[in-house]
Image (cartoon, rainbow, N blue to C red; front, top):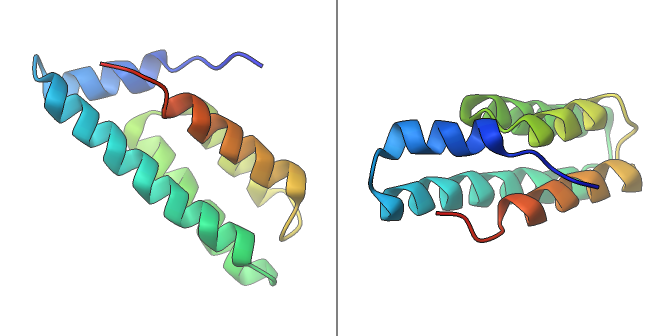
Length: 102
């Protein structure tokens, strides 16, 4: 599955300008925050907790214009708590976003 991070990269570039270190720091902040929400999703056993974590992930993705992560969060919202396919989709997107970018 191919991921398109063009909007995310453009958002990071717009925020950081010509500073690659700041761009990397912003990407790291996105990834760290997304992993926290993913951890909450993995530990969710009720609809409420699952929904809150998925909504937070969706908001985070929207603020960074991370389209693929946003789509994965929306899929999680439509899924039952603990749905393995939803969790794997988010993990896959995060692995792609974590790839070497400058």
